[in-house]
Each structure stands twice: as structure tokens, then as C-alpha cells.
Amino acid sequence: MTAINEQRLLTNLHVERPAWSTRTRLAFGLGLSVLSGLLAVWSLEDFHISALVWVALVPGLLAQHRVLPRRWSGLGLGITVGVLFQGYLGPGLSNADLAWYLYVYGLWIGLFVAVLAARSRSFHEVTGYRWFLIATPLAWIGIDFLRSQMTEVFGGTWGFLAYALYERPAMLQPVSVFGVYGLQLLILVVNFALALAVIAWWDRRYGPTDGSPAVVLPFAVNRLVAAGVVLALWLGVSATMMQSPEPTITVAAIQPGSHDADRQDSIPAEEELARDLEQTLATKPFEPDLVVWREAGIRFDPRKPEGERIRQAARDVGAYLAVGWQEPVPGKGRFNEVAAFSPDGEALGSYGKSHPGEFAGDFSARQGEYLVYDTPWGRFGSIICFDLDFTDSARNVARLGANVLAVSSNDVTGITEKHYTHLVFRAIETRQAVVKADSAYDSAVIDPYGRIVARHLSKQGSRMTLVADVPVGTGDTLYVRFGDWLPVLALILTGVLMALSTAVLRRRRD
Image 1: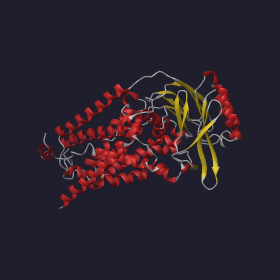
Image 2: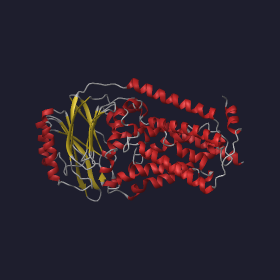
Image 3: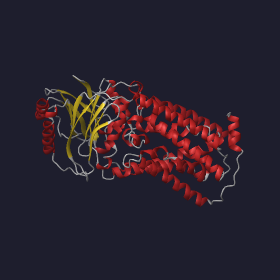
Image 4: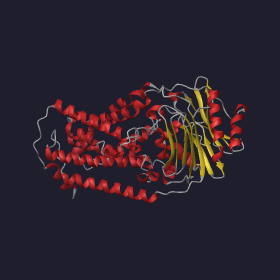
């Protein structure tokens, strides 16, 4: 069908629509937008209704493009995104001691999106909805990428819809090429294709509003079929990429139960060290190759003489140790690092957190200086807590040749169901096995294809030792080699579409 014929179909359909008042349209449109945000929240990790992620945005898009008055249409997407972020992050951070702006994250990000989306409806009406499936999705992942470059203020990849599918590794393998942004874009395109079909149904049933051109079903169905084909190709390719290598190393995550659910220090520093040592020595019958301790659990630099007990534990167990430690820095906060030790007790190095959480008092003197350590079974490197919410940290470790990633964290109870799931995507992106040791809530072992080999979750906080056999990865993917090429391309295309939008709307005014 040619563009001319498509435009004729779009403009020649006229149906009598109900005479709704502006107040009714606002109330109904805002309700649909809130529903969309809630559906998105319910699709994510806390609620485990992952199928909703493919349809969550549809009510809000209908509100934006048909129900709300045109001058208020940006609120449709703004409220949807605002409810998503507030509902996803707000409850989880309620008991954490963080910067004030993180508690109202959804409010101001929703306002930001509403402003950006203010002209979206007019642009799509003038261009016959031919860019509907890609314009906003491209802008969405472009903005996601930009906020992930702004460290703590925008939360890295927190709130990505793609994380809803963390328990579906058979669907996720192209992430090793496109990164998590690729799956994010696919989910958005499918939502927008379905929304276009619903808009076409609405126009057939009620007619367009505010003099908008109608979208007819054949036009919308063509787009929906195209999105379905892309989804089918993604799933087919993913199935061919999935492998099941045999376990080759034994790893252990030490969770000492440092905190209770109210985020109070339930044990003093010396007792925590005693627990770490006791739990580490208890892994000796399993002959672990790598043992990981939690973030900032030790209150001194373990490479100094007072760390002899830790070095002796490495010798006794015959394993490599990754030990999280902290030390105050007057006027700046605290060092937050992970020191590595060999099976003979030698200090191999200490990695400083590359994405320090300044909201939690972190300070890094070696930000961005990644380290890897040679072992008989390959190489491993460390990242720390907030690092795992960014795509660059695990990738930079893999670029140095690592095939196992040791992750030390110090989470809060509200993100018990969420935080470790991000590592499913870091594992696939980089083909590294991942070992996450938390202070009390969510320790996990994940294989290089994103399968969760073992995990222990406790919202109340608990002490436990997680031991598992896991295959080492290759540490080599197209995503490791080329990085975030997709969101960069999305930003470029978004700039082109914004220029087109400005030109089209100016021509319309003239």
C-alpha cells in the first residue's frame, strides 16, 4: 500500500463520536494513564506478571492519542511513566536513607516526559501515524541511555521494562548483541503496535477526537503484523543462541545477615567479620574456587596487617576471595572497594566502585579503574552494588578478559526481589558467570546465559551461605565489543525525527 493510499484511508473515515465533556475526557484519560503505569509496575519483578509488559502501555497511549484533549495529551505518557517509576522504586526505597529527590522520582520524571510528549500527538496526526511505532520508542531508549550516563541522579537502568522478563532466559539471548536496550525497544514497539490497533478500533467505534484523522484497521493491522514478525524473529534467534554448558567451577556467596528489615545494623563489625570467616571456612568441604563477600562488610583495608585472618581463610579453604571493605575518608565519605586474594593468601588488588552511590556516602578514589585476576579456570573481576545497574561496568570487566564476575552488594529490603535480577542481563550481555553476595537480602549465582543457578531471597534479612556449581563464560559477545551502539543510534534517529516533527508542525501552522 503506498503512502498516498494510506493517507487516504486515514482521512476518509468519519464516525459520529460521543459528546463527552472536557472534564469527562480528562478524568477518563488520566484513569487510563494511571492504569497503564500500574500494569507496567505489575509486570515487573515484585509481582511476577511478566506477560503484562507486552500490553501495559496500551491504555495510556489510547488516552494520549484519543481520549485526552489535545493540549493535555502529553499527560497520557507522562502519567504512565511517572506511575511506573514511582510505583516501582518508591516502595522499595521507603526504608532507605537516601537523597530526597529519589523518593519523588516518579513525579518529576513524569512531568519531564509529559513536556516532551506534548507535541507527539500532533506530529503523528500530521504524518498519518506512519512513524508511530518507532518515534517514541526510539526517544524512550535514547533517554534511558542518557539517564544511565548520569550516574546516581537517574538510577542507571532502574525501571527498564525489559527486566520483567528476567526469568525467561530462552527469550533473552539477543541481548548479547543489542544489550538490554534491544529488548527494551522490542517491548515498546510491540506495545505501540497494539495501541495503534486499539486506536483504529476506537476510531471505527467512536470516531477520532478534536478533528484528528482516523486510523483504519488495515493500516494498523499492517503495523501490528510487522511488529509480530520482528518479535518472532527475536524469539527464533534467541532459541538458537541458547546453550547449556557443563558447570566447571564451584562458587560461594557469603551473606552474613548484617541488617534486619528496618535497615538497622544488627551486628557489630567484629561479629560480622567472625561470621564471614566462619561461613567461608564452612565451604571448605565443597572445595570452592571463588568465595565472594558482601559490599563494605569489613571496616578496614584487608590488605593491611589486620587482614591476616582473611588471608589465612583463603589459604585454609584454598579459594580465591573477593572481600568488600570500607574505610572513612574525612570530608568525603567512605572508600567502598573489593579486595581480591589468591588461594595462598596473596593480596591481588582492590577495585574501587565505579558508580559510587554518593546518596549512601560512597567515595571512590579509583573510579573506572577495572581489575581482573588470573586463575587456573580463567579470569574474574569485581563490581560493587550500584555498578550492576549500569551496562558499562560488567562490560568493562569482560573486555579485560574476565569470564566470571564477582558482585558485592549491600541492598535494602525493598529491592530484594529486584536488584539481583539486573544481573541476569549483565550475564547475557557479557557471557560471564555471576556471583552476587549481599549483606542480608538477595544473594544469587547466575550462569552466562542468564539462568539463575541458585538464589536466596529474604525480605526480613537472613544469614546464609550460597554454594553452587556454575559454568564459566567466554566474556566475549558483540555487545562487549561494540557496547551501547543501539541507544546511540536511537538518539541520532530521535534527533532526525525531532527535526522532521518541527518542520512538519511549522508547515502546518503556515
